[in-house]
Image (tube, rainbow, N blue to C red; front, side, top):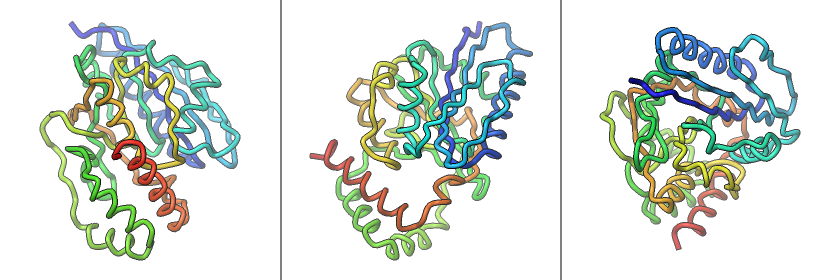
Length: 274
């Protein structure tokens, strides 16, 4: 028998209201399919941490589950938006079987909840990495990192981000190298940051963390703290997310994108690669 499940979504929006509407509708579609075909109870809540410069109220009355839009009133960054919403709304991640931290330029598949339900009480798993299929390249963004990134690789990336022209050249050279989908379920080092599913085993950390950077490198950050908690990340390709590819970060100036990546890599190296 499939157990009752509860899922908290905390998504971060930055001037992407069309994508946010589509994301909420995809959750609604998956919710309706699950409750219409399953005898187990599904409880969900969606929190929108809204970093938008031009705030727009989302219509939430039509949803059969709570949708709470919290205005950060300043662009707090990706995980900064999450922690501000957590503090303002008194979120307790331990109350939920699963907690999703995500962007809004993604959609869940219609069978999202039914595939997720099979992983309730998954011993030792602190994070589930779903298949995140790019609509542009049709490749899977997971597994993000199979193993821990060597320090030398981080040093190289920090160097490239110090010179945006070099980094742009590197991305052009590697743009044709796409990761395929349909991989087998297995343990990996880190999940892609655009859509991360955390289990209640990691709730204590989620209830107290403060990410020390504005953007980027959240994958390594969470992977390191999962390891410290004796937990691991499980890649589960049967759980499928579609990704519309950098709708928020794509609006950034390229120089800012490189600078923030470099700053976050420096933070990771300082805190976890001594």
